[in-house]
Length: 272
Image (tube, rainbow, N blue to C red; front, side):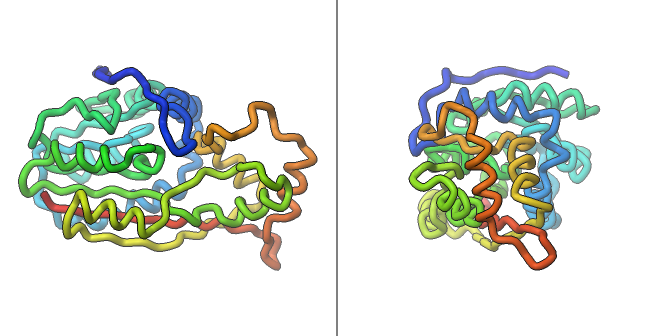
């Protein structure tokens, strides 16, 4: 399979998320373990597929931030006669997607803030848990609006402030003053942005709680996803075992010794 490349040089991201290059490397390094760890991603993406079930069959579909191509493959199954393209910033993810995806799906290495596709060229854009890693989400929404054909549909999901609040609080007790958890925008800010760029979009938000055997299992899942803390203020050395044990002790635990992590999830659906 061919991976088409057209991407601008990586720029430094704002808001403490690191450079685009480092984000792409981080996710690329997790490409082999991503699908097995992506419980949340599958829940949120399946919700979008269900929302799109009655969508007229599109001629062209773009899975923006496709990762390993899990939903590119599902979209190809849902729309077998459509031209499906999976686009991602990470060449490692795209290589994994191509290896796992028989069929005619195209793969495009691209920056979602500068999508190398023509105006009014896509009937359906599907983007699952990608936009939260951008320091300029408004650029991504505007690019989606630009390339969407009149009457086309956009389905996009993200994470909001409050995600992993239990982990954040546990680290605040174990290592005061040192950030360990990725920051996400508040719900009001996200909703205002969507309404500004995509007027009258349908917006949905809810908290999804996932169970873990321990905080260590949560940490392992985040590593397997490539979703570890990406802020520029992170320590450049390995966190001391003592601090990590202190965080585990501070993490709230249920009576059955299971821990939970909450994810503040949001979806937006728009018709061009």
